Amino acid sequence: MNCEVCQLKELEVEHFEIREVLRCILHTIVFHRALGLVRPKDVDLELFEITYVQCGVVELEKKIDEKIEHFVSWVEKHPNKKSQICISFYEVKSKPPSWFSNKTERLFWEQWYVNLNVTQHPKPHSGKSHHTKVVVDPGESASEERGSRRVALEVSLREVMFQIIKFVNEKKDHVPPISEGVIYFPHEITVPSSSDSAFGMDMIKRMLQTGHPTMLS
Image (cartoon, rainbow, N blue to C red; front, side, top):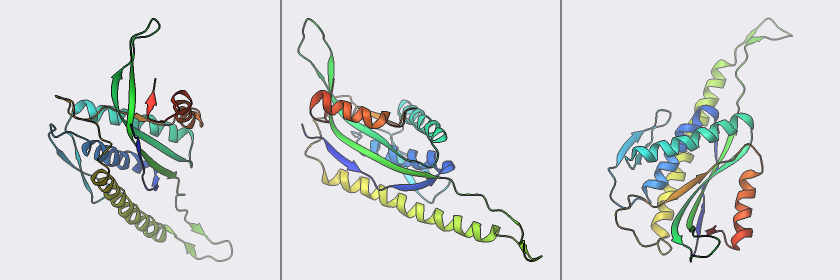
């Protein structure tokens, strides 16, 4: 089985923008891998003039929110670092029974990498010049800069959404047959852990165990 991989465009975000940006991206991915048995729900972002669609499944919303909170906690401990979230879709297959195990295995057929660069922009400082008595008030220019950055992020977020739609429309051959009664394909969301290298080591471990990133024992 082929595992298609999509590396989404990196977005530069501030801490307070993380939750909205990730909800938008993760829900958009899952919705486009839904199987038609969902009740679509439009969601308007508060920070951007963007509307995305959720599957309307409460359990799914909770799962995504939990992963986002784990990611936010990691960011708070590792500020000003580029980071990545992976959402992997898989099939569940039964292994042949043996004396040692009677387990199932996950066959990964698609992986999406959400790339974020979380930055901390310094707050504007006002005061007086050391050489003159003229009051220096950079608040207005700082506000303009933040506004420009917000517009640029909105444009980039739209590009990521179009990247998702383009990938889904072009990559179809690897999608497994639909199981009856399934609302959306099984998936897992991987976020960085307390260790800087844990996320990368987890991916490497999968390849070492199976020889291919589509398999996980």
